[in-house]
Image (cartoon, rainbow, N blue to C red):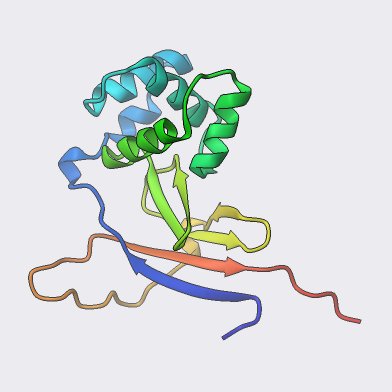
Length: 169
């Protein structure tokens, strides 16, 4: 194994196609973040409560990014949004369940939520706890493993772990 990276391949479940939000519709929003979040929530069948609206606005107003629940909670606190960490977790999982977010499990104790819910892979920068999208052409899988009887492969997630090289003398 290389000293600069290790590759982890894992399967994770994806929403059935009929429950995933129309990504073309998501990109054709009208530009008003508050209105756009309300429409996104209604499209996927979630009631636009004040807390969902506020957290959705914080999540989606800055474009594609990767956040942990704790990072979103800190941003909400700085924005004076009155929510508990439990509410942040619940909202992130609700958004993930309806396809607005994609959960990326980096290890057993840390998950990131990606506002880019399309199929793509990630670099994880160890020591900096940063998750970065890998360009679409950056990963090529020759073949996926055979699924056990009664199952099908829903998605393959690749996380390439990086660390900074030690300076050479």
